Image (cartoon, rainbow, N blue to C red):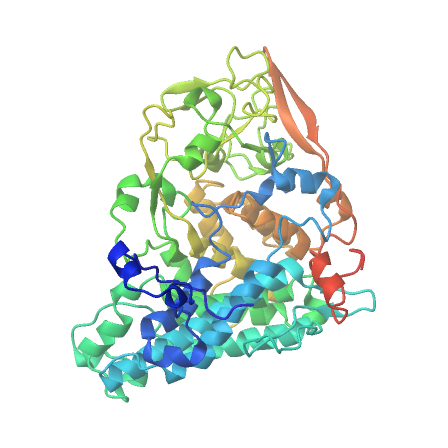
Length: 602
C-alpha cells in the first residue's frame, strides 16, 4: 500500500528549452514530487491530507445524499431495479465473494492513513506560533483517534461474527502504519479487544478535542485544557473555530462510544462483548444530557421527524450550525438526484424504493392502537383512514396528493404510477417513498429545479430510541436508573410529537406494565421513526430475530376498483448464519491467519 498518494508536477517544455537540452538530459527522468513520511514534518498542508482520507471514506456518507437504501433487503421495502445489489443479495446471492455491504477493503485501506497521521502529526510544525501549533496537533490527533473509533464501529457492524469454534471476532487490530516489509498475515482480534481499542481511541479524542467547534470572543471562554497551554481566544478560534465545524468532536466521539456499546449489548453480541444494557443506557443518557440538558426528553425537537421539509431552513444552514435534531450531519447538497430516483413516474421519477405493506401495517391508528387490535377502528377496505400521521409523511399511497396531483397506485390506474404498470419505474408494492424528498423539486430533466438535502449522520431521535431500548432491557419500562428519565418517558414524547395516542395513549400505558410488550413497542417505534435511514437491516440482525422474521415475505397492496388485497411481492432467502456479515473471501485466500465467520465458507 502506498503511504502517500502520488502527486506529479508536470512542466511544459518549450521548443527552445528542448533545443538547449542534450539528448541524455531529455530522456533522464525528472525528480518526482512524491512525498515520504519524514518530509511531512515541514509540510502541514500535506500532512493533514492524511486525515482527509478519513473523511473521504466516512462510513456515514454513502451517495451524494448519504442514503444507502438497505431497506430493500428487508421486510420494509423492495426495489424496482432488477440490478439493485441489495435486491439480489436478499434473493440469495449474498456471499463472502459478493458482499454489497463490504466495508473491509475501503475502511481498512483508509485506516492506514489514520495510523500514518497519528505517527507524523506530533512532529509537524503546524504554525509559527508555538501555542497554535500545539493546539493544531491536539486537534488533528484527536480527530484521527475519533475517526478510527468510528471506523471500528462500522467495521464491527459489517464484519464481526462468531466463528465455528465459538469465538466472537472483530478485525485485525493495527495501531501502527504498515510498510512493504510488514507482516500482513494478521489474525482477527476478539470483538472485546476491538471494543477496547474503540473506547481507548474515544478517550483520547475526548482528551484532545473540544465538545464542539466555534469561535469565542474572550479568553475566559477558552476551555481549561487549552488555556493552561497559553491559548487565547484568538488562537483558540483560529484552531477550533466555526471553520472546523462538522469535524470529529468530543461530543461526537462520545456518541460513537455509546453506539458501539448499544450494539455490543444487543442479543447478537452480548455473550462475547461483556457489555451490559445498563452500561449502554448510561452512555446514551450522557450523550442526551450533554447535548440537550439535564432533562433531555423535554427538549426533544418538535420537528425532529420532518427536518427535511424545512427547505428555507436547510438553504440557510450555515457552516457550524446544527438543527436541534442533529448531533452530526453532512454538508448540505443542492440537487434533484434523490427526487429523480424516487418520485413516481408521472413526476419524472424512477420510483426506485417501494415501501412494503409490512411496513405500512406497522403504523398504528392515530389513537395509538395497532391495526391488529379489534378496538383500533381499522378498516381493511379503507386502510389509510385515521392512521398514524407519520404514514402520510413518509409514504405515498393510493390517491395521495403530491405536488398538487393525485397519485393512483391501483393496478387499474391509467398511468405509469399504477402498480406494476411499467417495469423499472412503477411501484411493485402499491407505494412510493415520500420521506426525505423535496416536494418543490422539479425532476423533469429538461427543466430541473433542485432542492436542499442534508443527511444527519447522528440525530438525537436515534439516540433517544437507543436509550429507550437499552433502558427497558436494563431496568424495565418506567425505571431510568440514575438518569432521571425512562424508556416510557422517551416513547411517550416521540409518540406525542408524531400525533399518536392522544394525551392518555392507552396502548402505551398498557405496554408500560410489561417489559416484553414495551420491547415490541420500542422496536416498532424505531422501525417507524428511523425508516429508510439504514437501520432496519442491522436492527433485525442485532436483535437476533427468528429466522421467519428475517425471511418474512415482502407484501404489497393490490387495489382494483374498491377491492383491497394484500399480495406477496418478494421473498427473502437468508441462511441462519447471515446475522453476521462475512470477511471478504479474497482476504481469507490471501491470509491463512484470518478465520472466517461461521457459515460463510473458508
